[in-house]
Image 1 (tube, rainbow, N blue to C red):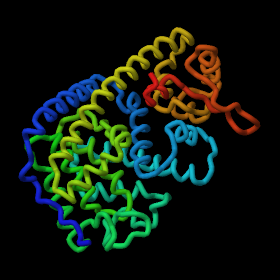
Image 2: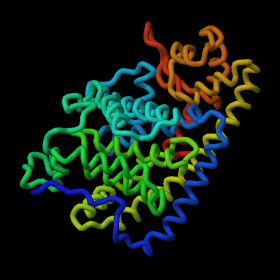
Image 3: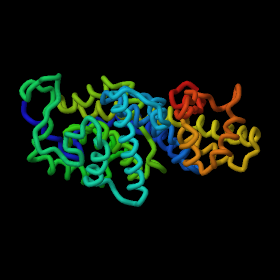
Image 4: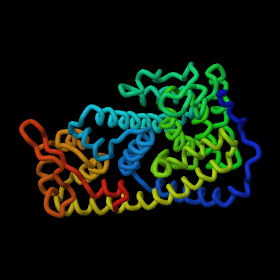
Length: 367
């Protein structure tokens, strides 16, 4: 099977008649979500649950099996078996990469190939792909297919490594262009990156990470916190099928349709989820203040939202509340019908682990 040769950008021959309605609907839904983000005073805290969920779901598409709760429990000191710990570390690496990328763009810089290399280095640090050239574009021919397949029997062979940098430079240049619609352009940016397949491992996660960064760089998001992996993970088979039809049939219109629908549905879901989180935040502020009367109410609530599974030592460090004061506050909140529950009782030197379940339920769509 011969290596894939990427289509020239910008694309020609798209069926705009099939796309026009979805373009309008997806743009309207994303604009509503972006407007909602603008009204959040502390998006890093308020949207931390969404970032954790994105890290879990994007990694799950690639085969990890850890949940948001397990990631947070791990950070609170819970112990898991070696395989689960590796899955969790991959998710934590993805979250670090998201945060680095957001900081990078917040400084006014643009998406560059050097940024992708930094993100890739972070992504594969001390996990299963650490032997697959972290922080470097591939220099060998790779291919995709069933386990044990050869180059001849592969279902997809990415571009020849000799031409890889040329394709990446064209792709990177396209990021700075203005195509017929930014959201459709985002679809093209993501798919073209996946088809170029520039890394030995981690292409899917880096490609999905680029989505909110590109939308933010094009000023379609007021904060680079729009995550598509919830929809893509739920429609994984169609996700891969639509990408396959690009290289098998040249069906870019079908891919863009799928992607615009993903943005439309995910934006609507995110609007509801963020509204619910904001409502819970305000409710919790009032409840904590009424229950405790503490001057530390804001630190307490912000730290709860930032990491809703915790143990006291870490909570004290992150909130700046002394441990004796924090113990007293938690005793007042850890009551029947109170916001905090015990996940694991303390024993000897092993500290207790607590949780804020109402926020976790929102992230899981159980609100």
